[in-house]
Image (spheres, rainbow, N blue to C red):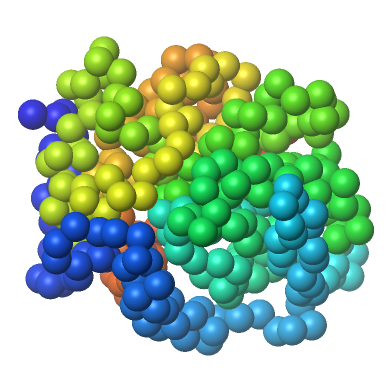
Length: 326
């Protein structure tokens, strides 16, 4: 039994019935369009919640930019706070990669909450609309995200930001996977020699395919089976979606890292192990755990006390990363 098994005990506030993404029977690529359509329902409900909290249009500047990538173009959406009287710019930057199993989501997934976060924390946010599987196979999405990271370095000043003030990567689920992957990749790239990524924010990260679990960590990676039938995200769906494995890459030299982990999540233990491996290599880490709630609960059930704590913890986690990288 995993030392973290107790984290799977359901939160008393958790509804008795929460649907899993997908459906009965094996998942196949031809189901993707219907699954995307089904996911629009909770997305729109989530947008309705955040819409009531949006700052005034005069508080920020919203722009879509075209970024050239191999084989085409992608869009990045920037949110730049309007400087208040006496406030000095440029501002720190945060590059955001949405979640959705590498196959779902887009600019709208976190559009409203990123606007709120940008204005509240006074940072320029770059929201990346990377190309999705299965239409675009790996490593297309990863390469798109890396191109967006480079675009940020080249254009930060134009959008009111400065990588010298702070240069974070952030994502949830598969987006956290992409954030971790580009942070690793940038370490040895001369392009980033004078523009180091200064922090990573990894929310419910997907970090390694279970087929590639290192044997020496097998006793610590039990949540994939323990929570295989968890609501929202199941083992079956993850088997269908998994692609990248940042957990297997040497973490030496990575910047301060903040992680948010759900207890009732198949991905729980790999996130906890990643945090330990980072710390063992001297990387500053901060971790918040949410016992008894499933993967992505904060998006589906924003009214839960744990979801409100998640939001506040994220803000404090970002501040911690900035302060730790100074």
